[in-house]
Image (cartoon, rainbow, N blue to C red; front, side, top):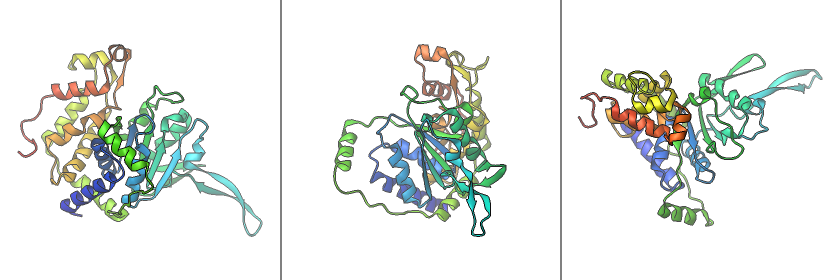
Length: 329
């Protein structure tokens, strides 16, 4: 896999998704970046904005095995990871046999993940971090590549549960799905009320996808850019060196996974743009989707109407940028 071929496949995936999804370019880019990092992504938006359709389309055009879990309040952990069942063999003997759950797929669509209880949500933690599950004392690896792409409704919606911070931190990115502008909505209605569904082409095999994921991790990053990613992550923590907005609004900042995710997603962003090395702009572009779900805000933020996106924008503006590494420099 070459950087040129990597960028070509990325553009082909965008083109195929564009046959089904109208607009939402930033959302499509975030999902594509997460996939090429073999990372998990959380999509948040009200029902009906095409989140599920986007992920189903992605699985179709890259030819990966798709599993879907519809999260509901009565879903149990065994419904996610699988369970042991007692079966009778041809010889009349009864034995416990493992029946795998829908987590055993390359791409797992966790639909409305925050409608399940915290107990069931916690069943995803080992799978997302270790890419394996433990059932009845036996650890079973999941197929590779493995991604969890989850949708959630805003927590203000009835029947939702907030995801635990530990689970949120396992998501590489969190993308917000906004209501489409009028022109896009007209196109969506025209496409979805007819009798024909667009024909999609498979543009990458699972083997090519694995090669792209491996190439992503080989992209070089200059030391001053690694330092900048670390500085951004450190600036999310309240303290004497933090800005006024962080000290007022944030209770806990991003974990080290935040800095790791900034660098990894910047590598994929650079390759998708046809460049063999990371630039400063790649890190800046990934700051919002990488960090927004890793900040824990306090009641002061809610009282003042301060969002995590506003906090991150303030951090990016205040954090000194290295003079080298700008795109095109």
